[in-house]
Length: 493
Ligand SMILES: Nc1ncnc2c1ncn2[C@@H]1O[C@H](COP(=O)(O)OP(=O)(O)OP(=O)(O)O)[C@@H](O)[C@H]1O
Ligand SMILES: [Mg+2]
Image (tube, rainbow, N blue to C red; front, side, top):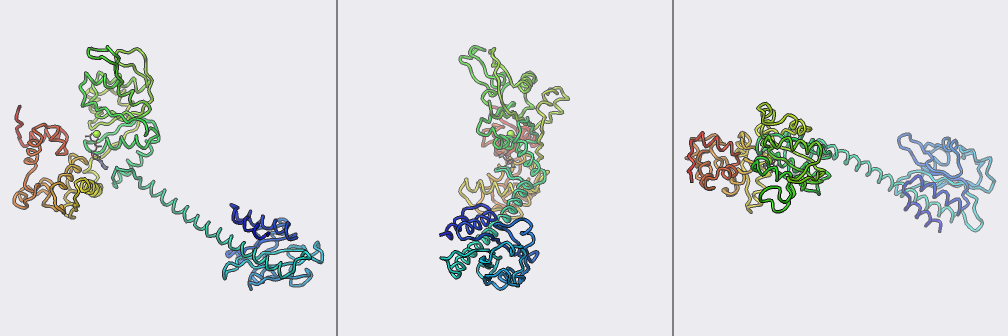
């Protein structure tokens, strides 16, 4: 009956040491075991040491250590058999606990090996006054069962703590790896610069600080702004984008601040502006370099006071927003030219993230190529691979339109390829084979030069330059530059 109690204690306690103590208490309560101890073998010091006891004081615990084979405890351990003495004056009993003098003559001492399989882990030592209804054989049998239970519990505990150490170590390694290699879903990069940016993005996301993202067109500014929002506590609130270059100056103010009914001709109803829509979320001011001078002080006021009025409105509206701005124009230069206010610049420029152009981080290109190949292969339900030579050519190219240009290029390559993209599938301006390109292959790209490609894109898009630029992965300015360079004439409609 007390054996099941022991089993219960061992199964339910969180610390083995506590469980051992509880078990010894049970032995006292149920079996007249007035003093007891559990000694475990410490392989480092090659000693049996008491790890739990009942009725013993600190000094006794410290003194009662045994080498393997020393005294009755050491012998029970070494030879793996139980020893029982009926008389404590027996000379093989070393009396390290000094109990001989205080125990009466009916007290037995038992040293029972704690076995787990073939291994002996320690010794259960008991001073017991046997009840009359319990034979010595029966008592010994019971205590041996308990010793087995204790051993098993100990072994399990050891294994568990060993595993725990392994888990902790693995966790540590993983956390460190994550810190060293910060991963953000959807932003690829293994170059030093990109890893540093990803690390910063994670940190910045934890704050509410205003961020200015700079970098050439197509480097990933919008992608990063979105991810700062998604990693922040505002992620379940709106992410509102306003492109300062795309909206005519006259409408921009109404777009940003909203208006009240009757604020101007045509304002038949009132309307919330982007600031209000972004409340508790993030407002992304794209192409901030194009924000008209007249609106700059108004934006500055919102940034400073977190408060504004709708057009035609009196009531100040309070908002809680996080601002991220991006630009591909050098704001410092605009400032010098008087096209960007210095005070606004310093307000926005609390934290700057500069995304370097792709040509300055060619290590990222193979990663991006594989990623886009995979993405477009899935999209167009094809299975397209790339030869190492083609990969090398793509890696060496200077990508003036950055990641966007690379992405668009791969989309077209996937569309026009069957199975494998090899070097002759690449446009001549990438491989540098302008002259050979014409004869080499009969595939789409090798047939045409950059000029022809631009012409083709223009024709396809009905000479709408902005759409052609998008198709080519170029900015409007880059396209304009090439149109001039190749002297392409745009028909006037
Ligand atoms: N590191 C990256 N990993 C994966 N995709 C990327 C990465 N950088 C950019 N892209 C992809 O490239 C394209 C262009 O990126 P994005 O629109 O963010 O550039 P941008 O700097 O905002 O350009 P613009 O100045 O023209 O607004 C997007 O489709 C984006 O998802
Ligand atoms: Mg953008």
